[in-house]
Every structure is written in C-alpha cells, then in structure tokens.
Length: 234
Image: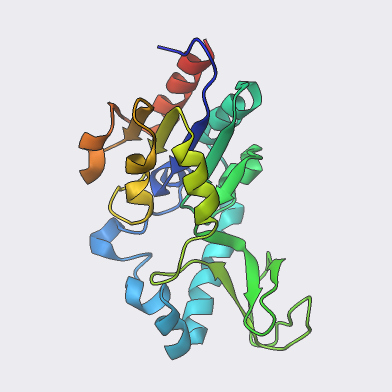
C-alpha cells in the first residue's frame, strides 16, 4: 500500500544487501570476519597492537571491491530516490561503495568508507583506492605512515549521528534492509521514529528487534526491495 502524500523516508542498509553481491557479512562463520576475530582487525586497540595486520586486512577488502557489482536491491533504491518527491536519506552500515556505484546520492555511510583513508596527524580524509602502506603519504599534510582506513571500528562513534537522528525523528517511513538488529546505535533507529510512522524490515531472517517493526518481509533483498519500491512508487 502506498501513500497519498510523500513522507520523508529513512532507509538503513546492512551487510545483507552487500552479501548478495558477494561480499561476506561480519558475523558469518561463527563470528569470524573473513577468518579474523573482530578484536584483531576492527578495534582501535587492534590497530595500535598490530597495524600491519589491520592494514593488510583492509587492503585485501579494498581490492575485492573490484570483483563485485551493485545488485538489484541497490539499483531499486536508486530508482526510489530518483522518483520519490519527498525527502529521502539512505544510511548504510556497509563500508563498500556499492550504493554509490549504483547511483545513490543521498547517502550517508555511518561506519566510514573503505575507499577513503584518514590521517592520524592532521585528520584529513582522502579518497584512497590503493593499498595503505608504511610509505603512504597523507595527500594533505604529506606525513609518512600516518594513514589508517576511514572505518568506524568497534568502540568508536559512528559518523553524522546528529544528522541521522534528525532525519529519523522527522520521517514518515523507516525501512531496514539486511541488518542484524544487534549492533547499536543502528539497532535502535526504529525506536527513534515518530509515533505513527510506518516501519518495515526486509531480511532473510528477522532481527531480534523485529517485533518493533510494523511490517516484516522475509526474503532476499534482491527480491523484496524491488517489490517494495514498485509498491511505493505505484
């Protein structure tokens, strides 16, 4: 069922939407991330303890982006953005570039971006498509060996939270796609929408927070997202 008017939409996407393009999710294989424990590759402490391992892990992930492409769900969300006359914000927990490559413009990567590097010396964030190496220099300040992946690790604050919660508090429709519902603060986004807003979850398996959604649509993102977009634009 569509809307008589065009409310503000906030969409949250998680690893499930990228998994259908061939990128593994964090919690596959008993909590391992591509055979690494989260504590070894996804915390500030891990980077301090073994920066070479962490850089190698993200260098490998960065290279893998060349082997995958946006899928039907990514493209359907672009179609929705292009044809929805109300405000729309797409918040992703994913650090890949698949939404951007599909053509999403109103995009907020809350956990950072794999194709960017951040300088520990000057704080500059730069586009970075190659490996980060000990001899890599910051494009802004020129310092050697001070680059880290522009990724929000466990224990760090996700990006642009004020903007996200402002959008949530004013939205009429909130859609969560392919997210586990176990990682905060994103797992609590559904609680931030106003009373009366429509909330929809699309997932292969319903999240722990599923009971907080008005509607749950089980299935793959590549099937369910285009269906929902066609319904909303009808």
